[in-house]
Length: 317
Image (cartoon, rainbow, N blue to C red; front, side, top):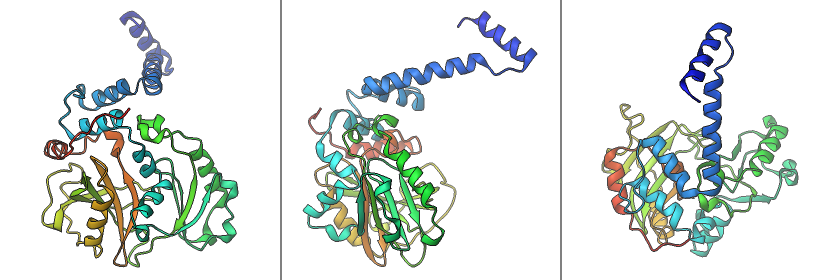
């Protein structure tokens, strides 16, 4: 669209107050272009997202930063174990095969669609999850006040979503959508327990992110990163950095670290997400592509330090 058309559109808007047609056409083109890349050219889509965030192309020929190496792993290391462990249902099989089934929350039911759920048979508190993505969670704190119709509508909508088509996270593409019902995790101090996210590199824990203030979808507004042993706070995170917090080391810390390292051995990088419930470690999920591998909330120090810990394996496509 040339400048005369653009100027004419702006003059028309000024006179009539109609919507900015130029803006919407431009936005529509960008969305169509992004969708084309996402559906057919995952490498170019990753570069498109990276450049929009950082203003430059990702160096995927010789990746250095944390984000660059995570993108490389997402695109070029398509190990089937990532899909198995990224799926919240099949992950349970992997964990059990490692002799660590006691870390898993109690499984109440598995369903292929919401209509299969008999809410009358569920306990007073429970958690429903779609297993093929992130943020597909419904937490029931009190069944007497629970909106079953709304829950079914949400679950039915989530079950239609191909999560690999949101940020190009390829390991989600072959997951079978399921709904699981798990036990409600009650730590007696809060109905939303803290989430301890252990950053692991080839079976070695490096640091722990503590997420608190979580909503029912799992979104969090407060993060703190601690070194191993809770000895210091590395300067890794930019958001909320001015707020001072002193979070005590979790009762299940030692068990969390031992379990995280045992389960993460096959992977160049995985974030092991745990809870500490009444002094016991409980595994929530295994995360391979946090924030779709583009995380501008990390500091430059974090990008270089964490990136240096990832040893890239031979490609698996």
